[in-house]
Image (cartoon, rainbow over all chains, first blue to last red):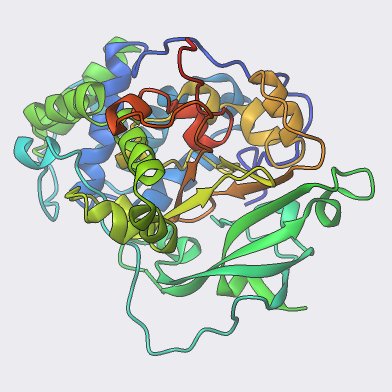
Length: 219
Length: 190
């Protein structure tokens, strides 16, 4: 979707402000939100693209004003309700009022101590890759209403394939259902800065995105 | 927010979805174990061991895994070498993708709107926010992490470091230098 999250190239957000000696978490609840998200992902309640899509659907004014982990928490509440894993009255009450649903598995302290590793996103395929390194490709001018990982700032622009990563879970499909992986070839496509930003762009800059095959056409 | 999040955790635990002790372990892991020191060790080894560096640049996944790190980000890790002619910088304009398992959790600025919006359009301006000025003719490659591929920048080894041990070298490798918004520190610098 053409949402506020798709920020590449926007003006007006000001300077980047690094925080000296930044702590890992700024409050204990931030760590709990991160850990809950990891645990629910591990349990198969939703996947990473569903989490992202839930954040993308927050009202733009909320998205840009709340803190990072609050955004995660709001998305998690939305995903719980949408998937029937908890109801709004339970979240408001702070207690379960009905029995939980069965999930695939539960994160144990031992596995968590290893950082709750993510699954691999690579998938086997018999389908040949459509593009190879060096091919010139155009990012399609598409505007799906649902989750996509093709940023607006590259759409309808021409770049070159510089890496082929293999076949990976397709976020546009996976955001809609856990079992909906629809693996696609994944490429890194590099664009000249002036192709993206016009003749006033910095001529020494090149920008790449990781683009799934359905995002691309030969140029 | 503390109360709201505690309420959420209580619901999830009572529903049987999560074990609060597992959450403790996740928090502890990211607070105390996984962090930029992991990436710094990889960089210091690459600076010291040309054969390791060759393998790291050819296949970041395999090279990091061979160090005995059993993690998953390595499945999709690409290492980008900075040179006098070419500087690499990593961003995620759409959310906050970052090589967690080798750098820990990203800093707030990496996830912020100013960085996400400007890194792809005005990387020299962003570098200036970090006090970094590159020669005008240095090529800048910005890598927008829009899929599950993860990128680690291999910064240039600073001059005056001949003969230093890998532990000493790792001290010079800042987190920002592995994202591409900083350079490795000179020996003796703060």
